[in-house]
Length: 552
Image (cartoon, rainbow, N blue to C red; front, top):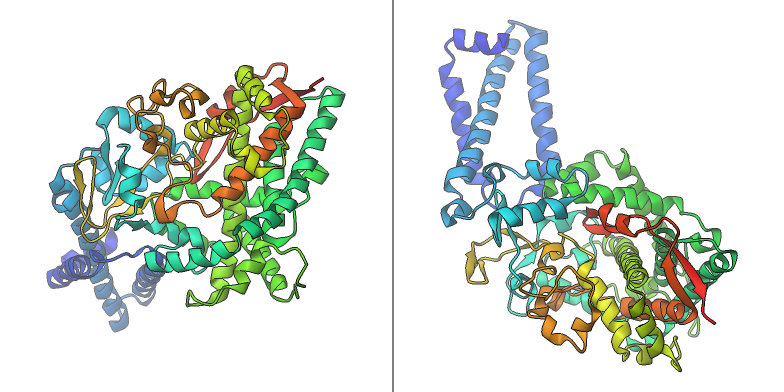
């Protein structure tokens, strides 16, 4: 305050005006164009260093010529910041294209997404958006340049074959590394996906499934040991141990050993903590950049950094491995073999792909299986229908399992009710904007499509919140708009590991249902699975203890 008073006492109004003009120019000629989240760390550091340096110089050097010059520059810089901030707020509130288009939403959402970061600090974004949906309807402005869409046509509009939409700024969270699921350039994504497809051919899947069957057998043995001893099984632990072990083996031929030791691996526990940070920050990608690049060894970000270092180390080892013709090959082999056409630093792609393939394959599959067995325990008649289908079926025969009506219906209904991405998967409209359900969304707008709410719409699915697998078979009339449920996404952005994931889930369910009856453990209701569910881009569910009884 003393410095500000001194400024105005010396009548340095022309310096104030200069700062205001610089702020207006910076906004309307620089920052208003393009994307700046990648440069957020440099912008914040450079501005912070500048203002601190000038402030220290002004206070330290006093009324010397240098000190007075620093004071003058400080005046200009203060006014520049105030002008820039004010101009941005006024533009967003009154003149932004979404304001002119008249989208409804909380008034403060026009100014910044910081409100959303704070509201989602406990990783319950699906509940926040569900509340907004009930208040504002299908199209809500949830940020300065962000629209959350609850209309069921949104998925085909943003991911369909004719879309011009790209992935949003959030997907740069691996920067400077990148990965298939994080590629925002459509042509580059197509090229990279072709490379991945080489590691997911029918022949490669057969090889991968042999490895995964070993982990399924180990999962069954753990459950059998609990069944024989009469102990409940913590499904929220063993299913995640299984999926992480299987994916570690699938990607690097190196499982984490969690099933064998019946305990969490330190790296996986850390990575899950790191993932937790992504949920609250999803609506502010610039904060993610600042966190990962300015404080990579702080708190949960340290755990993320450790996991990235582990993947990097294993990929380097894979580079040095000489694969014989008949030796079993993991995904890293196929990625490294074909990694020659995407440009840039090839190792940045390799490291990002390795982390993506493990995390993207583990968390969703385990979460789906957890919810599936919750529903089977709650509705044992469906477990018996699946069991009846399995009589005389080889539970390791992927082709035979894919034809079983109730087995696949149970999986499809679980994925509808428990989507992997509750609110994630943001897209950004192209140069021509995009029309969804008759509503035009202007160009360069971030579009959020919360699967948790859309897949439970009553106008899309009859008795939408109920677990009714028949809607995917004999009661197809209960599906009014099946496009509202897209658990693996659609179009070019669909999950590249879809077939492997489905094959694995079918086999796990078939093996366990054919061998055991399942029920809740004493005192267990299953309610905590959804009550304690957290939305951190992917989904982590609450605890579930089940008892398995050997069939006669």
